[in-house]
Length: 207
View (tube, rainbow, N blue to C red):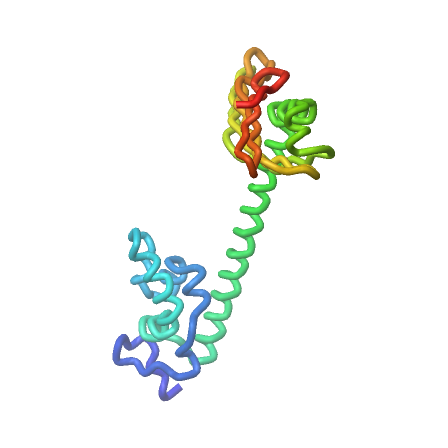
């Protein structure tokens, strides 16, 4: 305790035991900064500079926290910083799980949507696509835009198509009017040859 110089600013001697990477500062940055009187962390809100500040917080965070705030002991400092690191990890994992759940929900919604199912049926029933891809045909997760407002809506989707003979990409534009979906434009593009099959009508034609 006699050598505890924490909270004395730049004149404080930083113990070697704590002069190391700070995961709490890196993961929780500006929140950690407020909690540890290290307000340089608020530069995280400055575009471009925030990337540099993020890594500076990880590398220098322990030093800054020791100098900017009074601690009972080295052990007290280490215990508190471990808690910050733990909560940073919880936030990181929780955010990743939430993002994965959101992506899964979006993809599931698109895969079960009427425009997607109509497009898959049209692909499977088209002789030209079957010649290029073969059967059985496997379709991938769609990406694009999907909007519904009451009885009306619009969809613009793209998804992969693969079979024993080849693979390619399907493109679909569909609209919903008075509760009924219809495909406005649709095409399949072969990955190898670049040949396109127009599927806007029930029977496609090469383009």
